[in-house]
Image (cartoon, rainbow, N blue to C red; front, side):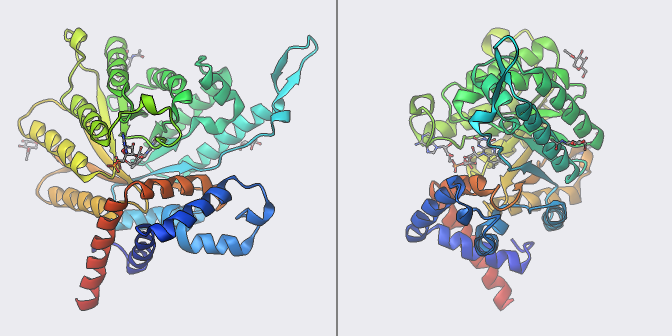
Length: 414
Ligand SMILES: Cc1cc2nc3c(=O)[nH]c(=O)nc-3n(C[C@H](O)[C@H](O)[C@H](O)COP(=O)(O)OP(=O)(O)OC[C@H]3O[C@@H](n4cnc5c(N)ncnc54)[C@H](O)[C@@H]3O)c2cc1C
Ligand SMILES: *[C@@H]1O[C@H](CO)[C@@H](O)[C@H](O)[C@H]1NC(C)=O
Ligand SMILES: *[C@@H]1O[C@H](CO)[C@@H](O)[C@H](O)[C@H]1NC(C)=O
Ligand SMILES: CC(=O)N[C@H]1CO[C@H](CO)[C@@H](O)[C@@H]1O
């Protein structure tokens, strides 16, 4: 952690320490919940300047990349200065439409989406393209398809094919991303949306698979009982149809809002599921009934703060490379403001490996930091989710505090 600027180190230490305290976390979570759902102007962080400043100095600056292009560029430069090989940037804005504005009736009396709904798709596309321009070649764009509003959400829930207006928007986003030398991933959502979203993600990968390394990644949530079968389905389609498969693997962030029976009963089972999916990709294992097919071109992005999971996957990847066995491209990433001790270790391992080897056959994965941008009010939902996540990982948060403390002490005496 010697790489972190002292200012960031201090802010992280204070905030992360507070987050290990139940006395602080409980009211803070309640407050964030109110702030992220209230429609009162007084509680709107973009209108109430005192609230805005307060949030910025505390949680916002710790977890978010900035409110405009200038601020985001500064954060991205700082992150890369620490040594990360790249960033993943997402736009936090979630457009909420007045239900009365959603539908209009045409002459025949059938209701269709209003112009406002189509404008929302365009606004979302513009915001996503603006986000893309804030990152560089080698970086990722995080795309949240639900941000496109009711036209997207309704079709996703009903598991209908992607509406034409969205297909066009995604084609434009994908081709701009490709031109820039970046890649993109689709964030995973709750189950009511995810089946539809998986189908769309497959459709998008099918259309934009042109290169050996995928341009588009879909997210698989290891906490779901059906996640391995879902992965196998992705592998089967990619192998049969000849497109390259990008998988971003997470455990899953919606346990508190999800139908509990869909999720593994115990944390240990989620851990096993996560490691099995990573292993399947890294060892290029075809599903049992498709052994005659060749494993598709594929890449794995390991999105986790769990050190044992990261260590296992990295070891498997390395063993295979050293034994000259085929594997897939592996990269790792953590969220800004979280698990810095793991991130810094990954960065250091990468740099050490670079010293003795060339980039062409380096056997250590690149390390990324994932962040969101948007106005303070726009980021409240995102911040609320981060706080919930910290509540569920007090032990690891304590681990991060210890590492930060040690580093601060080293600087004081050294
Ligand atoms: C770069 C990045 C991108 C991400 N993008 C997304 C995304 O698009 N969609 C999304 O949903 N999440 C996303 N996440 C969040 C992720 O799903 C996890 O919530 C978070 O990373 C914590 O899991 P962990 O792997 O770090 O490990 P840990 O902290 O070891 O695991 C915590 C996770 O285990 C699972 N779990 C906890 N208790 C139980 C239990 N009793 N039974 C079963 N399972 C349990 C839950 O999934 C919980 O989040 C992302 C995370 C990262 C780092
Ligand atoms: C989106 O961007 C285009 C081109 O910059 C602009 O003409 C259009 O007005 C924007 N639309 C919305 C809804 O912001
Ligand atoms: C790196 O690759 C080159 C050729 O591709 C090979 O000759 C060399 O042995 C490799 N180095 C390591 C450390 O694997
Ligand atoms: C279905 C499809 O378009 N498949 C193409 C995917 O890309 C490879 C090249 O990487 C082509 O050979 C396939 O025809």
